[in-house]
Length: 70
Image (cartoon, rainbow, N blue to C red; front, side, top):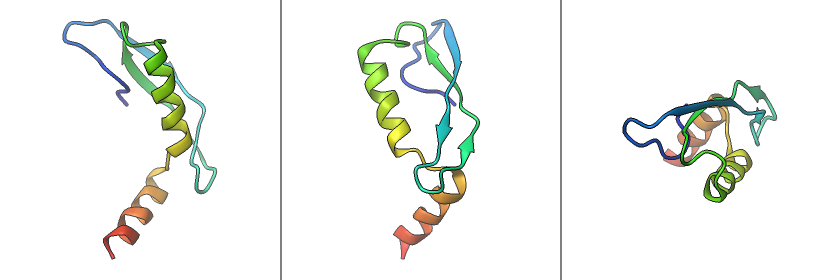
């Protein structure tokens, strides 16, 4: 999954995260990609922490989406 900003012709950094769904606590693969200039910046770290705190697995995300439609 692409994360953050990746500019045209920029080197791509691949990294893995320990991701858990905040709803069901299920571990999910966390293979991510980001641009070299954005990787490890303060903005990157803030966005990454927010992402981890709000992450839903596919099953929980779909359940929430269906619930929100009703």
